[in-house]
Length: 565
Image 1 (cartoon, rainbow, N blue to C red):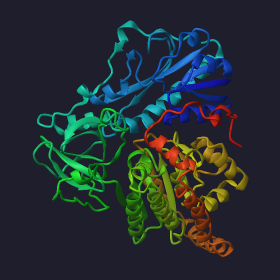
Image 2 (tube, rainbow, N blue to C red; image 1 turned 120 degrees about the vertical axis):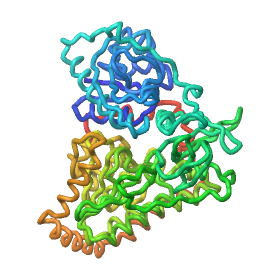
Image 3 (cartoon, one colour; image 1 turned 90 degrees about the horizontal axis):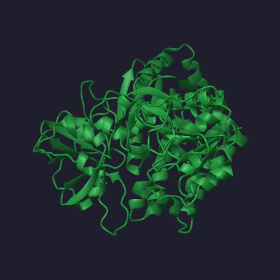
């Protein structure tokens, strides 16, 4: 069928629906809700309209004349714009996704499909949305599309006794009372707003949105006080413990410029109180510890697993350097396999555009950041004494996707989406992609991936050689599955033979053209972009960081082929 996706943004769920419906043979295009929708729909003339993430209503002149499906992140009967926010705030253990027929009243249409999903107790809203909710949404969308295509299914009205309409979850509903709220309550409020909109709080003489929340089991103090910092995050006391908050965003002043999220310590700047201790933790934490750490290392037999989890998947200069130091430590351990990744949610989205935007000299910070992530990619590529695995529990894009290709094998959770390109940010790209991408998919397909700038499903990535193994696991079981498979690979009879072959191949490739030559050419192009004030990168970066809405739907989203070649 010819399917038009209507969305407020080309977010993670819209990308996944786009990629997976395309895999199923449909012609899929996208129209962002930034202009007159009725006119756009007439121009597309689709068989079916699906709205994976839409913050505005579809006009009656559209839904009354064409079949329109709305994806609602809640079970049958749930209504309102803050469905998932309320579910997490109230500590729900189970939830669901419903595909509805668009009608005049929001979320009130007949049901095309509904699929349940769990809500993990320790994950934030954005993580849950990209994983458990997205898994359920894809199952519901594909079921609804198949039912529509059959021509024999009639959507079912919502039972009146199941209807539960709830209001928008505003800051008054989210506000933390540090003198009364226990740790569990604070964490639910933080996690229900982790990526957007954050929890507004008066703190250190300013108003800040708090983003993200993680439990701390070893620190305590006066409720609300700052107890420690760690890797850019800050720890604050609750009435019965403490929580870690990785990111802050200052409240926008009336008439002032838009603000954006930054690592908490960087956002505070000189407001950070003197004498706040830096609370270091070892890479290998005991299993019973409940504390926040962006990088951890564990061993499972002869396999080492170096997990990392950076908010939004962005990797700043400092984060890249810390991860490289941890990787080098892992190389000192007597393992046969080393896994990079293995956590649920984002693998990496490359350089940290927010930190770059906040820098006194964004061009120089861009340069420092790209060199830091290149150092990491090169370290993985030149590891010849063991097998390396990149384990993607969630999405990867741009330099993060290319970082994964530096490993000998790429394992990907079913449902993850890859964006192996840089064009939409106006960059040529680095991370040694000019070496790793063509050797996996061939020069012609590599260039097509870069030019098309479209998301690729994990199944399609496996078909074309970007991914070596797709793991059909839940988000919660992904880390355990990776550890089990890595430990089996470490003791497999062929592993040591593969290590020897890999070393010989690397030596042959190095003699043919050194990695330093690939890196130097990539960085020459990147440096030219960074230092050119008129390069599109700077405007595109600012638009991304400040979440500026595009004036129109990008052309590349309207020329979708059934599948990437």
